[in-house]
Length: 326
Image (cartoon, rainbow, N blue to C red; front, side, top):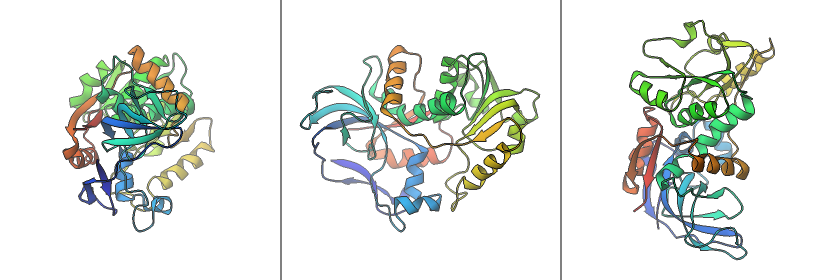
């Protein structure tokens, strides 16, 4: 099969589309023929090995796992012994390292769900990591409740587009921050108010928010905290680019959040999404019901997967970028 791999750390130039052995499902596993896979910032973090502290786990000099991608949607091509939950021919979606490939093996009882019939393979593949990140950020860490005011900084990005919708699902009044070209898109996703960061500095406005979900990290923590209500919550998951914070990444900012949270009733925190079967099942239900939809910037063939990651690194994607298989 063909797959995107990288045998060294570096920019998109280290990626290549190579012919590799097709995996076979073992007991309790499913072989999925991938129809579509999406790219995430996680992919370029692993590709570049940045922040470099992460190489303690991913491989000091070279990547221990050369596979790329995590989100996929496709059709069950084969099942291992003991699998009863799905059958050959079923349309499914989920998360598995190495998703940017023609086939991927997934535990049948793991991060795998039936694809809703009303949702395309591309839309299903776009959702898992970004939508679960938004869900955990708002529901678990933000503890968003009906009637609260929520600010989404980076509302037009992969995570942000889902966060705007999920904020409304949770009953919040949602304000999104994005650039001029994305104002209409973010409004269409359900935002009650949209702020154009090219003309307005959100930190200078008098508004106060119960929850701030920051996917960008482009303002100082003091300025962001000033936007919180006295018991408000700030959740920061983004910040930097492939060319900044190469050694420690967000760790200094995380430490600063913890220190600021020691003073006053408001809190500042970060997290790394931990996708669970239960969260993927909730996502499946939301997609099937139409309460959540994927905003796709563009789809490209597998032959252009390297360009897709290069485009994502530039930070201009409006929603998700999806790779479709031949």
